[in-house]
Image (cartoon, rainbow, N blue to C red):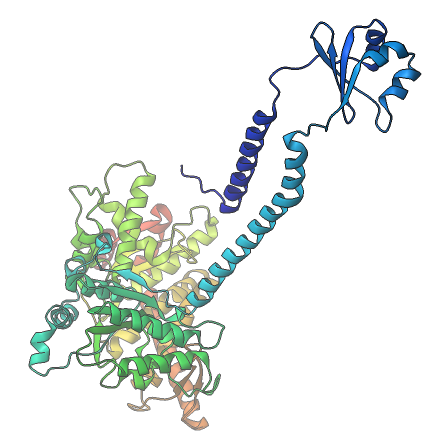
Length: 616
């Protein structure tokens, strides 16, 4: 494990080591070769009285003593006192003292006596203050760099040399055939720009990818950069806007400047609606930072020269709220719609996301694809990942078909809430409720086939009836809508038939049925009021969501709309009640099977329905 050391501690330790080395060198230089014999003043007096000493050298308070036998010793006298007075007070023999040669010499100073004060009071403060100011200057420089870096775009670079690990091509993107054909022209222009410029052609400066969340807009943009092998500067729309005025515009200028320097290149702005919403909403005024950022993007896109090999790509799932100035020719003048994958595309997507997973031999990805209509690429990736997690949790070495089918329900409805145990009465109510849904759905034309019925809690639901269309449907009729409303009310009708009253379990069904009936009349024009759309949606631009509806009709029409909604709901309720009452035997059989097994699959449900028809 690599440990990062604080630069301050590193420099401080270096200074300490230098001082220790210098001190050690001077200590060795000042160390005496031989330690002299040290005697006391009293011993000195005795030696003088015995006439053993021939010479005394005085250096400050230090006494260097030389004996008659050529030996030597050292001693110390009191400060601020003369040697003769000190020796006389201790009873020295004055005659013997006069025979001794007494010399006065300068006191020998040790190296530390002059080096110590210089280091402590001179050099050390300079080093400390110098280190302190050096640290401050270094931080100031880094702070200045950060200040200038604040206005730089935080774009992530993909697709260029040195980023081969992140390289994605069209082979890594399943489906989206029409979108890839449109983008092939962009790739060809980035590779061979002269071919188009010679013909006087102008390649689109901006390409807008429109589609629901998870359909692969960002992935497809990166695939364009990988195919063209050019730098891909990716940035999110929200990264431009900060709390400081002018930062967004500065980051836009820096982003486009960087792209021009590395041309040919691609700028990719994800979630363009974060800064590209319709201007003039009356919120924030003309000085609004988001609007200033949008203005700068418009100016930069206008500033592209014809020979400038920089293409701006953007992605959003809210193309309806973008400012018209962004969508005019010369800016984002090429719009590519990305649809959710069909069944064949879903098979390819599952194959890509299962490439590195150990699949069992019995895996049928086509069945998984058929059970996931309306799923986006991100949803399918989640299904494959959940299947791997389920297999690993059970200590399996391979992923089987059952894990994929379980993963679909987990993604759709949430994990099983096995701890949410229903009482015997609640379990029976849930069984009849789900049986009512399934029975009504199977008895009406225009409904989708029942795939599974369960009274095991998932997410917020105590039970569920899973209907999956057998084919892709992009348009629906009034018959299908009315059948769906009747199916939603089938659970409530079954409860009332069996228990004499309804429960709160039908609340979510009522919300969906009422909303669908309202849309049939007000949006789709499928009522006696005629093919007219009622109501105008209003939304706050900065919130990006519908918050109110402006009425464009009278109170009289509003009353008629309410009556139409009530009529649709009442008619569907009557139809569902008739079905569960007429086929009460099948209702009882489905409910009892659910109470016993908790889950009924499609094959078993169809056998129950066919058996009831034969008995009749």
